[in-house]
Image (cartoon, rainbow, N blue to C red; front, side):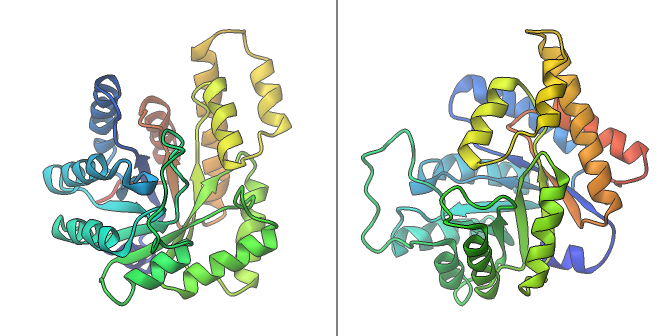
Length: 297
C-alpha cells in the first residue's frame, strides 16, 4: 500500500504510530507489549525509526520485518542517511525492498550522541533532499519527508527551513510528516506557509502525548518544540509527583489537540508513541467514539 494513494483516495483521516527499535531487554519487553496493544487498534500504518550512522540498522530491520511480515501491517520505514556512504545506503534500501517495504521516510538524521567520535563516510549525503534525489531514480518507494512547524533546531530561519522542505518535495517526497507541537496554531500556520510556497502534498500533524514531565522537557529541548504556557499551567495545577495525574492530563490535552486537527480536515494523525501504548490507545478510542477516526480495513 503506497501511502500517498491512501490520502488521494479520500477514505478519511488515517491514524499511525511511530515506534523505535529497543536498545535493551527491558525496552524490548515494553515494546512488545506496546505493539500488541497498538496493533489491536488497527492503525493505517506504523513508522519505524532508523538511527543516524546506521546505529540502529539491524534493530530497525527486525522491527520492520516483524510488523510487515509477521503482523501483516503497513510500515513506513525511516531512513537516516547521516554518515553513510552510497554502498551502505544501497545495502539498507535493498534490504527494505526485499522485506516488501513500499513506503520510506527519508531524513538526514543527527550524529549519534552515544558515539561523538564517529566520522561520516567521505561520500555521505549532507541533506535529506540529497537522499531523496539519490533514491528516486533507483527505487520505487513511495517517499516522504519530515517537516518542522517551528523550524528545525539547526535552521537559520523558518523561511529557510521551508525552502529546504520545498526542495525535499521537489526531490521526490509525496507526503510530509510534521514534528509535534503543543499549540495547533503553530501547525496551522506551518500548513498555510507550506501551501503558500507551493507545497501541495499531504501534511500529517505529529502528536506527542505528555507521558511525564522529564521526558516532555528533554524531548522539547532536543527537537525545538515549544512548551506552551497552557501546558505548564495545567501541569502546575496537578498534585506533585503524581504520574497518573500527569498521564491523564497528557491524554486529555492530546485528545483535544487531535479533535481540533481532525475537525479542521487534516489527512491523518501521526502519534509519537515513545514505544508506549496506554495514553495513545485511550486517545484513539476517544476519537473513534466521537466519530472522528475509523479503524483501518
